[in-house]
Length: 163
Image 1 (spheres, rainbow, N blue to C red):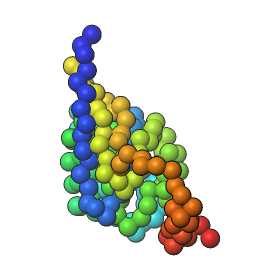
Image 2: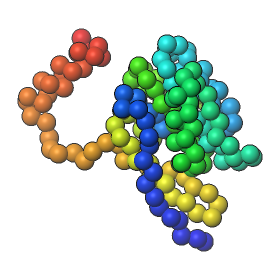
Image 3: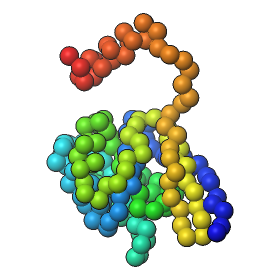
């Protein structure tokens, strides 16, 4: 049994973009994720890349924005980890798409959905590589104060997620 090499791979994305990273299991995943995204909001710009881990082992790319498709493809190639996928989104929040993505029959797991900087922790063996987890954003600095609670609640109302 060979010892895996563990590495952190930084996800590259435009500063105004959000990402969703997950694991799935079938070649049609890229098209199914495209349909899930379009059915929620056809005006949202996005790119999807799915890393095929059997057969041709290609990066399958879909989306409705060439720049975001290219970024998703580049990130997926850097990860090259099992049947994983990455979705790069502009103009919307991942929370709007998560249930639809989770309901895609080939989706097994969601690792993160965020606008934060992300590093993906990958283990690589002779057979291949796989995602162990993600580092999503920064380390916590403390527990929120009453002022912080008020600020959080105001933000959620300003962006339309609470009344």
